[in-house]
Image (tube, rainbow, N blue to C red; front, side):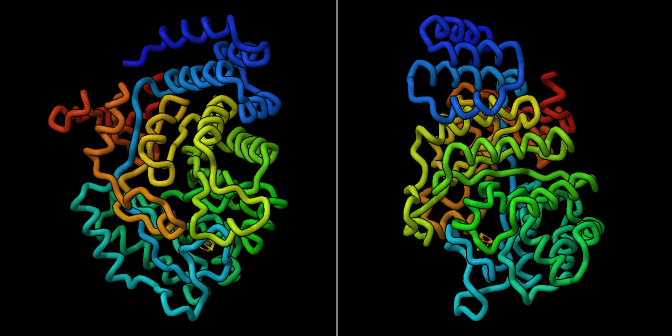
Length: 406
Ligand code: SF4
């Protein structure tokens, strides 16, 4: 089992041989001081193996301080209700334009069937996201929410990206608050903080030129937080962005969280390039290297502390082994069971579309961490000891991991 004292001793040993900048960051991390943008940049550019190992242990130290040896996962299901989209992001191979022969919109009956199936698998969250389809009116979105809640009103509905909220508000000539309130009244619980990609308009105009701008994404997220609707936040990296864009992206997220405390987590999303138009654009990388994935994870933990303390790595995009390793680089959550995954697979992801509860438990316990199923808001649903399904401890329901460890 990973032990905080052992990590501190290892950090102290490495401080004797690391560079002065890395040692300075380590010392401030151990005294729980906030890092600045220069520190964040240093982590993202670090290519000295000793420095990088020191920073990794610092990220692991902060993870252990905030969530102990627990690594969480959520039993959820994605339902992508339409692939018709007029936005046409260059990294997206999931969507098709209106009129395309493979375009679809799920009927409410089909959505209901998927939700009923999810309930049989003890899913606690349904994530509804789709393309920006001009044919779909507010009534359809309301019916989607009601359909889920009609099957089981305890299911948490995590739905509709800031892009979908923006486009819906335009289509219905309602402001953002009005749209959010109507959706909340009809069953919306939280919003996914997708469509963030990289919050820098210079990058957005190349990777997703018709998507909402940075200020619009920030505005919608802040309105949601002000109305008491929590959201996640995301970063999609490994394409054309430079280090300064990542630093700026993290700074924007940290500043929002400082003001609103409305983010439940950050989800780190490496770009899957295989089947995308973006890979043809000059200067676009073929996804991220594993070393870059590691640096991003360490930087997210160190720089976003103490504001955003839940760092999720995506097993479906990274692959299970790299995702597992990132759990020792500051991440504390491995995402969800998903049940179905369309978007990463359309872009060429190799991993399967779903992972069972038991597989996630094994994946976590085999690296000496304690698997804990959580709900969308990071309340613990169940803790599993020794990774053994039969020795699952029920309990600690409703206690937040962060509160538990503070
Ligand atoms: S990422 Fe979303 S908004 Fe962009 S093209 Fe795909 S479905 Fe449409």
